[in-house]
Length: 203
Image 1: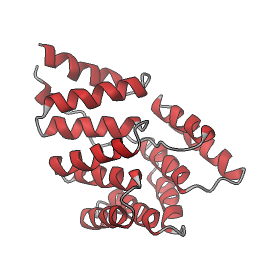
Image 2 (image 1 turned 60 degrees about the vertical axis):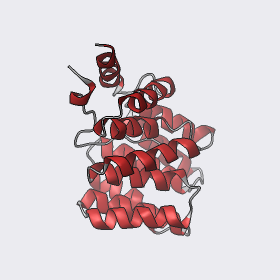
Image 3 (image 1 turned 180 degrees about the horizontal axis):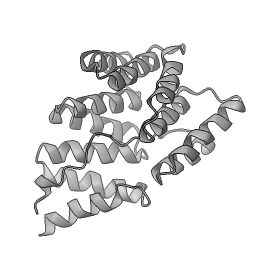
Image 4 (image 1 turned 135 degrees about the vertical axis):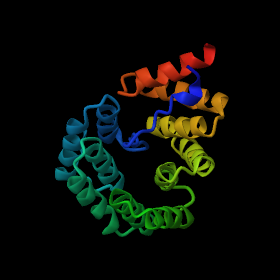
């Protein structure tokens, strides 16, 4: 079996967050181990302690998505839409539109977030996720590669960048991103699929 047949991005795209403080890094670690409920709970604990960082809402929203709890995810993304930062507002609106399948709005809002703040890695990550859903492999790879540059400890940016390169049949780039993903998230639920894709390159 060739790597071209091992397309890892199904109906659910993997998510995580990076660039947070020590406590939120713990939530990220839970997410990367597949402990989605615990990750959302950790974010809530930090919120109860006064941490209203929009990145925390992003983490919780992605955790709820992984549990197919779209309403709870919408509530987390609505926190972004209602925050005072215009780039984060656009990310939240894009994420809600993506849940609703409103692809034009999702890509427009993610693009707006990127244009507002070209140093915000989450904006590029959100844009890449939308482009994956739209089967725009080259654009997704470009956006997600930029997210990995801005957030080099963000494991799922590497995973989804690898998926984008795989779909575009750029297997050396796929392998590079997947290897870094496994270094950052050795206990991730996607590890076996990623390893299978890498093994297929040797066959």
